[in-house]
Length: 175
Image: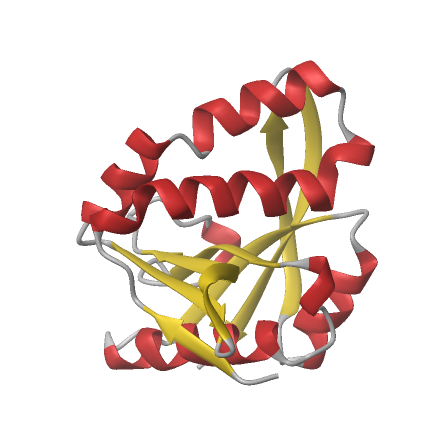
């Protein structure tokens, strides 16, 4: 699949909001009570929040469009620089791959790997030596993907969706 990767500015906030909510729901709606899922989506993917994130100089966002239809995005990812890095990551300057989601209709077409490579290139450009992420413990296909890309598990943390508490595996990759 030919794709176009763009680094959006705040004018993309509405599109990113809709994309993030849709892809997160597609991925996790079967595993979360509707009220918890709605609360999470409202607190994470509103256009206002996406505007803030797109304007944040410590966040780097990438959106993917099918090159044959550049009106509808099919994937996105976000890198975040933060001073809140878990000790077990082993690098206080590590950068977080905060989000990476691909439309299920485009799964298996190499889009996730292209996005990950874009993030790794950005992390290296920023002088980072480690990239880390959290992945739900019951998402074996994502864990397998990250392991195939050189990530390894180093710990876990609690991830809250509404009032529901989940465990995310923390994985790192040395760059």
